[in-house]
Image (cartoon, rainbow, N blue to C red; front, side, top):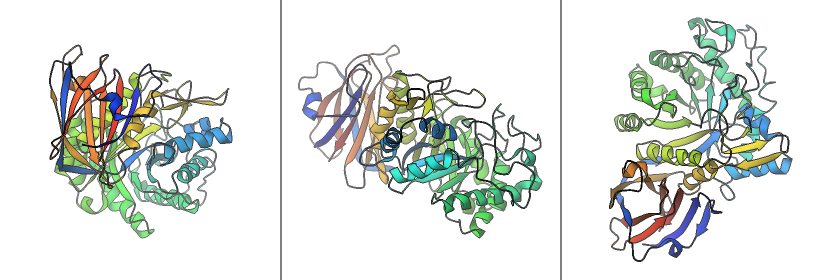
Length: 460
C-alpha cells in the first residue's frame, strides 16, 4: 500500500491542511488500536461531481470591504484548483434572499411584459462576485440558481417575506422570469448549470420565502419552466426540486418524480442539513432513483458567527462524510464569507461561515470549517467514484457513549487518475489508532489520527 500524501488538520496545533510524511503517523506497536478501516476497492457507488459554496449578495458585500489583493486571495482560496480548495460548484439567488441587504426583485412593479426587468440590484455585489469566482475557477463552475421568492405582486400575500404562494396565473410569467435572468447572466458570461424551483418550499419565514407543494413544484417544472428553458435554448439546464431539509427528502422527491413528464424535466433533488442527521432519507432516494441527481445545496452553523470554534469544522466533516456515504453527488456550502456579526442579513438571521471578515479592519479570518471542507474538495476531485468502506471497532472508543460512529468517521473515493482519497475524522479528545486495509492488497498500515483531527490519505 503506497501512501502518496497524508494531509492533516488538528485542533491546538499549527497543522491546517498540512502535508506530513506518512511515517510521522505510522504506529509500529499499536498499544491502543481503536478501529479497523477496510476499503473495498471493488465496490463502487455514485460519481462525486464536486464541492462548492454560495455566492450571495451578503458575501459579495463583505468581500468588497477587503483590498483587491485580499479579495482575490479569498476567491483563489476557494475556487483555484492549484492554490485553493478547488471548488467546482456554486449557488446563488434569483431575487433577494435573507443574506441580502434588503428585499428586492428584478421586477419590482407589475409588468407582465418584463420590459422593466432590471439587473441593477444584482449588479451591485452579486454579479461582480460571480464573475470573479468563475475567473478564479478557471472559467468552469457549475452554478445552481435558486429563488427565495417571486416579486411580491406575483404572490397571494403581496409580500416577498412570510411565505405566501405564487398565484397560479403567474406560473408562465415566473418561468419567463427565470429565463430572462438566465439570459442576463449569459450576457455577462455567467452560465447556469441548474435551477431549483424554490428554496425551502415548506418554510414560512420572516424573510424571503414562498410555499410550494411537491405536486406544484413538479407541475411548474413540467408544464412551465422546463418547456420555457427548452424553447429559449437552455434545455441543458437541470431542474431540481425540494431544496429543503433531509427529513422530508424522500416524501417530496418521490411525489414530484411521480408527476407525469417528470422523467424528462426534473433532473433531481437538492436538500439542506437543518433538520438533522436523516441520512437514511438520502440513501433511500439515492437507491430508488439512481438516475436522478442528489445535491446537498445548503448548510451552515446558525445563530451567528463562531470565530475560532473547532466544532464547526467537525460538523462539516460529519455531514460531508455521511452525505457522501449515503449517495450525495455534489455538496455546496452556504455563504462563502460573512462579517463578524454573522451577516449582513436583512432580518437578522445571522450565521457562521468558513471565512469571517472584519469589515472595519479589512481582514479575512479562515475558520476551522474552511480547512475541514478542504480535506474533501481538494482531494476528492470531480468524477471520483465513492468506494465501499467498513469501519469496525477494535476497542471501546474514547467517548461518552462508546459508539464508534460518534467518534471516528471515514469515507473513500477513487479519483479519475486512479488514486484513492480516504478521509478520516476523529472527534475525540484521544489519539485514534486505526488499522487500514485495502481489498486485494496484502499490506496493512497502522496509523494514528490526533485528537480533534482530520486526515486525508491519498493512496496509489
